[in-house]
Image 1 (spheres, one colour):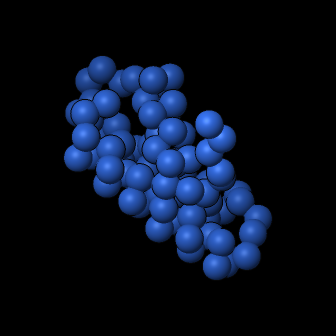
Image 2: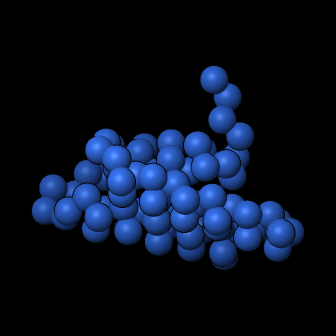
Length: 74
């Protein structure tokens, strides 16, 4: 299945990938998700070159993806 960049599913997949790679044993699930969220948010705000409408949509989808991960077990 192909997941399109910027969709909620894309950000869920990215966050899960980061969680697997950078598992920080001493952190809680909430802390880990918050750290990854901040990293991805920073990339969207400062590194990703795009129209502001696309940036806003990506930020909304990132927030929704983080909310989904916080309410589910991974």
